[in-house]
Amino acid sequence: MVQKTQQDEQDAPWKQIFRLYYRQGMELLFPQIACEIDWSKPIEFLDKEFGKIAPDALTGKRFADLLVKVYRKQGKPIFLLVHVEIQASRESSFAYRIFTYALRILDYFGQPATSLVVLCDADKKWRPHSYRFSLPGTSLNFEFSTAKLLDYRDRWDELEASQNPFAWVIMAHLKMQETKQDKSSRKIWKMRLVRSLHESGYNKTDILNLYKFIDWILSLPKPLENEFWQELKAYEEDRKMPYITTGERIGYDRGIKEGRAEEAKQALERQRSLIRRLLNRKIGSSSDLITTLSIAQLEDLGEALLDFNSIADLDRWLAQHR
Image (cartoon, rainbow, N blue to C red; front, side, top):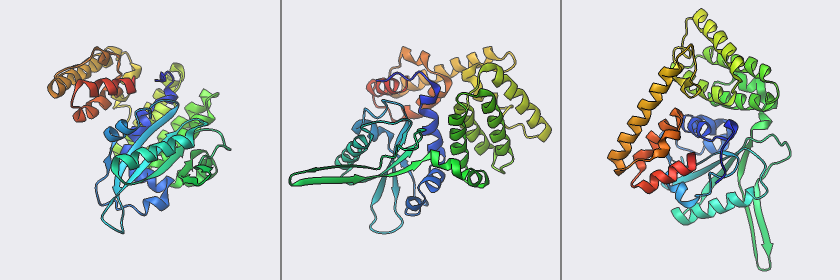
């Protein structure tokens, strides 16, 4: 397994934001397909099933893989499987990999999936969309849909004016790419996006959800991060809208804020203790590797363990998220 050592390569925030705003993401990135879906019916994320048929899905520099069960508006009462792949960097065998996932889904569920790819890379020319071969007596042309986030640079005004919360996800990603070598500019854009969130009219939950993603993807060196927090605190106090600075628990992983590192550490220990108790009740065992997890990873584990049936499930999850 490829070791994830850089924050920009972690997939958990992408997967979480897509789960929270799956419909909005589909409507913004794949509007024609979104129109085919009956959103009044439940959405089911098939992480466990996808892990069985594509155990290699977490290797490499891609942000998230989601397999989702939805329902179509018209036609026979069958379900539509939507395979979403968020790719972070050019990969020579990418189209073949998407094809093999489609085959595994067909074999496992007995029906094909709609394969969707969100390209997060910075290469304007890389636009994979098909896998094909031709042999004597046999040929194949497998095509899949893609959305290139880089293309939204030319649609910035549209994103800023959008009422779709997923627009903030795309804007934050674009500014992460643009400011990799200019962290001062990144701080300015981070503040601009967060201020726009406050003025968007969204409720507190949406503001916090989107802020957490923006905070993760537009990470700053500690001195600039401290400046950002001071500016944000002053802004929120002036606006009397202390949504974020009063929720400093979002920053536990950084051990931040005004001498509260010890408080963050204690909160992390409480979360670890809770997860251990839940695991012991669910599968009768735990793991020392839990001590290496951040509070965000512990929260993800707390959700995932509901589907665990044995220690093997825990070991598999830990191997995928370390």
